[in-house]
Image: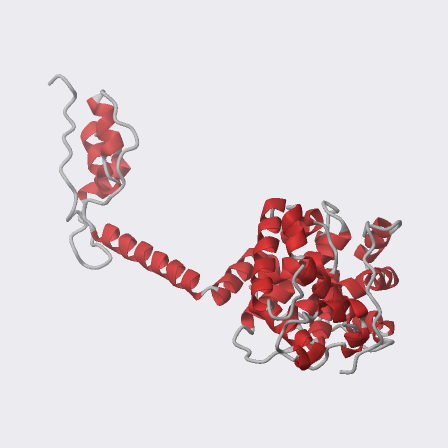
Length: 166
Length: 207
């Protein structure tokens, strides 16, 4: 590194001359006063707009926006990723078999039937297993018009509830 | 803007001065007199750094004032993990780099405010190569070329060079200010010097 330092000695001495580049005499006498005056005048603490208040509470968002401004490629990549995520979400949501999957699969078939039953098929299951439960049974037997006029149980799969071993 | 007599900005070895934390704590509570004292301590160094990065006094004035104001606004978030001096430097440097990136397409930077009183400085005169065919262009051209070459560097490389070779800061201090490791500082400095050397080869006296 010493050799490198020697190689650049002329350059370093030249750059050191830049220390002589100074503002006019007396410039710094009023410098701090100007800053304090700006702070006192409320310029620094002007009433914040909603956007400023929002960004002050989420500085990471401001940094992200600044990064977008400085690196358009980054902004493009971020937008592409968001679009891709949106498309995947839409495609996945439109799949009829994309309903919630059971978290656990047990060997007990009867318990498994409950766990895998979708919410719309649950009342029928209750009717089949407990005929004394009057409320849910009654509601499940009555045809209920759906919000959009279609059949409520259009996508309900029949649930086999026979105990294991039978 | 006219320039003053050459007067070197002195950079103390250890920037942290006695009572600084006390001033910072008072300023955090809104004491503007304490903040005024902090500004006076660092105004010349902050200004000089911004000026050497932008090569423009008006920009340096605006940016350094904005940096001090932003620092005051953010002072409550200063926990003392680093020195106030380093923290303040980071704010000024980030503000300057953002400014330079946003104005990258600016075609012309003001170079008319150089201190040409340095023409009589024997050190600077000695740097002019006797063999250069452009010697008659003189020191004014050299100063302009120097600033032009600096502006050709990327912001990160220019910053390292300004902080180290112009302002005399150590690698460790620069690493802390730029939030990178010392190896990065060294490699950036080496690359920047190589570039500058190549661009100014006609103007530098061989060693």
